[in-house]
Length: 122
Image (tube, rainbow, N blue to C red; front, top):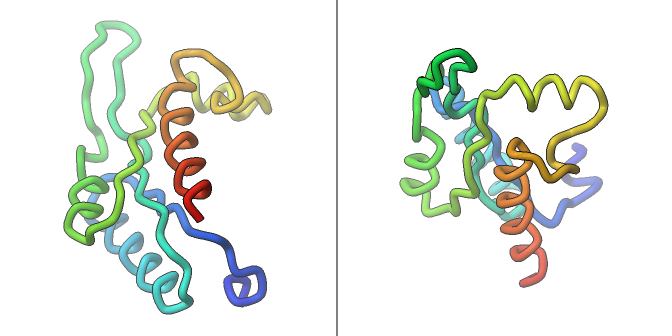
């Protein structure tokens, strides 16, 4: 398999917060465990949406599921990436927010710093 051939240093599991997605994420964790690939941590994607008109925050996919799963499995929780139109439009335009310094970049920078620290300890 690709994991056996390329043996990554670690895996980051990204999941939306709803139960069905977390079941798949747990299966991925099991696969990496069986392959001897350490899990760097879990990221919750599409976590929260801020209405551009009224500013109300809602959680159409739920909230906290990836963090709860990380805690239950004894794995690091790396952070949440919001469901934000700016992330989608910038990414579609070939300008991923993670490469920038705007408000949409903050979640990515925090996660990247934790991955960098994890890699630095290896």
